[in-house]
Image (cartoon, rainbow, N blue to C red; front, side, top):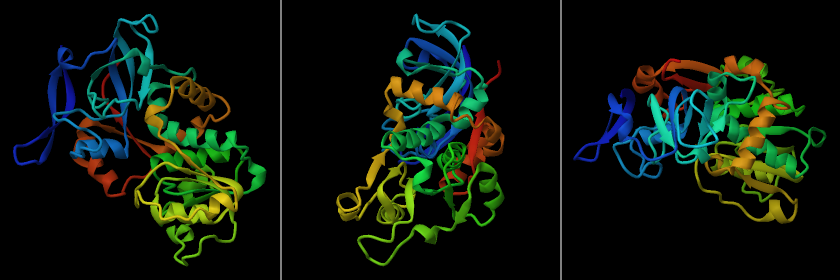
Length: 333
């Protein structure tokens, strides 16, 4: 059966082209579960894959999309039956396995999560990898004992997908949130999500050369990296925790050990793609219950078609022009 998919090809001269083509299920990789995809989402990693970044996707042609939500069409696993509503975030989907920007995917059953009760498939994709990443960051901080009484939490890249959801999750959990953004028109949006203070990027861009700064926050969820991450560590309160989830500015960290050995600050990494299934299920349970931010999701998301994604939004996210989450309507029930 033919279906529509975004197809990235590499030309003989090393350039990459994006086209929407027809494919067939028989061409998909091996797996126990065939899913008819209704929604996907746009992540920075998807845009890199769609523009030929071989650090993300080794072989082309390829269909990106690290998030997918839809209905089980064929199952050779006792865990899922035809008609089940399911989601996938991460694993190898959309990286080296044809991903959610196609109307069908075929994947191992071990990647698949049953849709949480109380959420629609679209809402699951508003959260998607960004939501799992933000929630994992908060989860790891709280495992170390971080709580709202210890002081504010900084969120950098606060208008992006991970940042927007992190602001909403932290506010829902009772934290004072300092949202850092380079967008001058984002105050109303961030206040709606729950930010109590909004600062520009200079707030977390220390250039003094000092190894430590006056402690100002109990922790942070950082999507930027580079000197921003370094500043967050240097000004973190004793026994605080800083979560690193991205490298928009730089993958390098030119740090001393002083924040760690003098102030006991913890640097926590979040790589949500390889999250064990037990933790993944726990995170979705928390997003359904104690971290439920359904009332914020519509403000975070913009729905687009696969054609609009290809023409506009893949390039826009690479240029830093996206606010919140882009949800991609792929198919119909």
